[in-house]
Image (tube, rainbow, N blue to C red; front, side, top):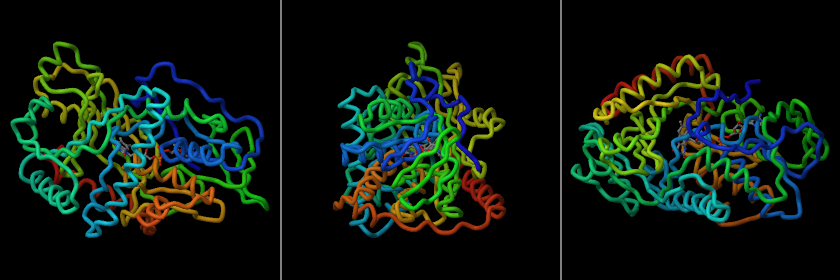
Amino acid sequence: MILPQYDGHCGWYEALDNVSAFPELISNVRVDTVVIGGGFVGCAAVRRLAENRPDERFLLIEALKIGQGASGRNSGFVIDQPHKRDLESNDNDLKRKLVRLNRTAIDYLKTQIDQYGIDCQWSPAGKYQAAVGTRGEKFLSHYEELLKGFGETYERIPRERIKSVFGTDFYSSAIFTPGGALMQPAALMRGLADNMPDNVQIAENTAVTEITRTECGFLLKTGKSSIKCRKLILGTNIFTAELGFMRDHILPVMTFASMTKPLTDDQMKRYGGQLDWGITPADHAGTTVRMTQDRRTIIRNSYRYAHDYNTPQELLPGLGLRHRKAFDARYPQLKDVEFEYTWGGASGLSGNFETYFGQIEPGIYLSCCDQSVGAARGTVSGMMLADMACGKKSELLSDMVEVSGAPSRLPPKPLLRVGVPLRMAMARFASRSEV
Ligand SMILES: Cc1cc2nc3c(=O)[nH]c(=O)nc-3n(C[C@H](O)[C@H](O)[C@H](O)COP(=O)(O)OP(=O)(O)OC[C@H]3O[C@@H](n4cnc5c(N)ncnc54)[C@H](O)[C@@H]3O)c2cc1C
């Protein structure tokens, strides 16, 4: 069984001060519902369970420290718009439902951030999608058509304004959508964990290794304890298959990011742009770039079929060089800016782009294959899984069921290990000007 591992390289997590600790579970316990996995799904699910049922106790179990998994390693965009493939659907009603669900997630996170004063660089900064050259322009125009057709607010940013915002004239044009937020993901995850309702117990560094169905529920085994519960919510992302669910349906894909040191005053002058923005590439195989509130630049690109789930350490230096090249192409005036961290993280995709949400077996609820937009989608999935487990009906829950589907069965692993890298290499080659 492959379990999550943390390698100490994620810049967001390593930049945190005074990380709190939740003890490993070493005694046997009995609770009504256990949530496994402390990412966006798990944290939202356990909070919502606790809000729905204030008189019951709930347990959140995380194999690592909360913030070390994918939810603390991402690029920090909390996106309100549907994912590209959903945006391409002709069904405007479906798209409206997706936007409403994503905005519900954004509001849920924002409410907690405000209520508990979570310091995670949260900002309603929206999102830029930017193009390089003719190929990128073609993708950007297609994106514009989709937004227009769907009646969403956006702004075309002309080339003259691009330099004053991003400090580079690398991009030929960009589209700004105002609805999303930016954040420091590891800080957000720690803040969410540190401010759970009183009826939530968190166990970190505790991996669930076995789930057995019993007469009245489930028996879970961890290294040092066993847990009896009636219901289970799995927020375990790609590791869900290792627990025996959705095997051959989750395609684990790893992507990589690097973070610079904070820019000095002199480097800021040479940079010449603004703080607190994020660009996703018009061509999806391109590069994501962020400038944080604390003057760090994040570069994310490159994909890998993550059959082994965790990050092979030997790949990181080469990927760091790729990020350096992408940074230098955008900021030739900042060759002296040092990179401090390079890391990888895996997301769950599916062969047919469908996301799973629901009760997979009696008493077991899960969502997976969020197509790598899990900050919003994972949060609202967790909320709605909790409602479903509590038998709480709502229009939002019906929408959630409606926008979700059945991830297709994937080809056998040996085929994936040849086919997926080949497809990724072709996509990377085609979008080389964007990288
Ligand atoms: C580099 C990168 C950039 C990204 N950028 C963005 C972005 O900007 N915006 C966005 O929306 N999405 C982004 N994503 C995707 C996003 O991070 C994921 O979609 C999201 O984190 C998934 O959340 P989750 O709760 O489903 O899973 P995870 O965050 O993976 O949480 C699952 C947790 O379960 C734990 N776990 C697994 N197995 C067990 C077990 N047996 N016992 C106990 N615990 C277990 C894991 O340790 C993990 O912490 C990015 C991903 C990466 C890697």
